Structures are given as C-alpha cells and as structure tokens.
Amino acid sequence: MRRHTEVCVSTTVREANDRGYECMVIEDCSGSYFPEFHRSALAMIVAQGGIFGWVGHSGDVIAALTHHTIQQPGRLD
Image (cartoon, rainbow, N blue to C red):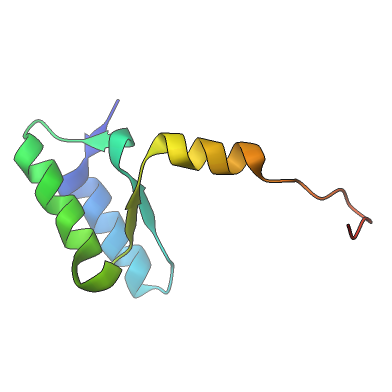
C-alpha cells in the first residue's frame, strides 16, 4: 500500500530533516490518490538542491544494496 506523499511522507521527511537526518523518499513506493499532489510533494522535497532530502527509485536502492559488500566482523578487507 502506498502512503500519501503529500501528507504522511512529506511531514515525516520535514520533521526528520529538522532533527538532522538526511532523508530519501523512494518515489515509486509512495503515492497519492491525486498524481499531481504526489509530484508536487516530491518537487518540494528536492527544491533548492534537496532542502529536505532526495528522491530515488526502488530499483536503484535495491541495486545499491545488492552490490554492497557486507563486511564480516573482525575482518578489515
């Protein structure tokens, strides 16, 4: 189920940003009943060079996590 980008997601990103977190919204994992609200909310998040955060796609996140090497405890490779 997609969450409302213009309400819950946007508010959470702004609040997290105010507390010092760097945020990224996965564009295709959120949504709205009104596509124009979704687009506007994402535009506000990335306005002024990412004032509240960044927007990405799930495929890119999955690819990055898939290719990330997990270091075993005690190893310094």
